[in-house]
Length: 412
Image (cartoon, rainbow, N blue to C red):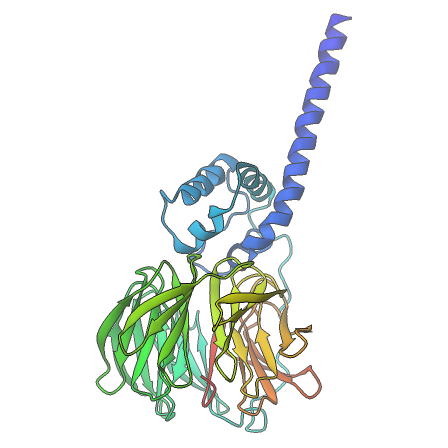
């Protein structure tokens, strides 16, 4: 009898452990949506420089999350993500990821291309970085220019003569002749350069160095670095005002939106942004009074730059992505690298419309008249072209490996 009672007790105890583990997995799955932008919804990372979490040991995952939380292990993005996690959150996440298979159960079927680029859909010259190909592709003739490893963000000078593209692997910026693709310079900048933007007068470019927490100032005429501007943790991308007197920089480490006085070459304030995690990319309204900020999770914040207040936060697709305000000011467009659609936000009503484009849309850009929206669909290796008159994908154009960012002549 005693043996039966003991056995029954063990069964109850085992059942309790099993139920707790199941509950942890379910809670962890929900919480892991915030991690999908880098580590994938199934724990398989989207980039070779980011580790897979699927099938990792639970205790190891817990120890790493605790280290990021305590900032004894330094990484601007992970420190910001872990800052708000409770012990229960960490346990649930570690339980969930440790329960996953190390490889995806089923490969995602890539979308096939359905057309070629023409001047109809590309009225302005457009340049797209190919992260895994280490190249820049020029549209509409689709000329391919070989750059360095991991070509990431790019920008075109206002006169259309130069293309700048960052390589965070090499800590450099590549400078190309925008017509011929001839490599003019490879300039060493700070650690892990991400976004690059050219000032409205075309005299300088700002490069956001995420790891070294500063901005490199590149003189466009000499192609030399003339200054380095310290900022807060994790600068990712920047945007100049129309007159070039200020530049706003997203601080992915969590501080918010940095404000740089370009004449003094100094960060003069930080605007906190509530309701989002890890400010990632941004663009400004036509009058430059409003900033739209995309985070690394699934949100876009509307920030009043005069008052410094966050006026609205909208849900979009999972993961980090680019963001663009169409030049006519009607729409805000953002991708979702851990999802399959772009989100188009009406700037008057703030209604959000989703359009399926394929696996892993990241970079987005609009033509100058706002008629066409271009989407770099990273996992499918295509550029999706959306017609804003119909809000439908008109073409998918095959490109190199892992299209990432898009620069359009006339749309900074």
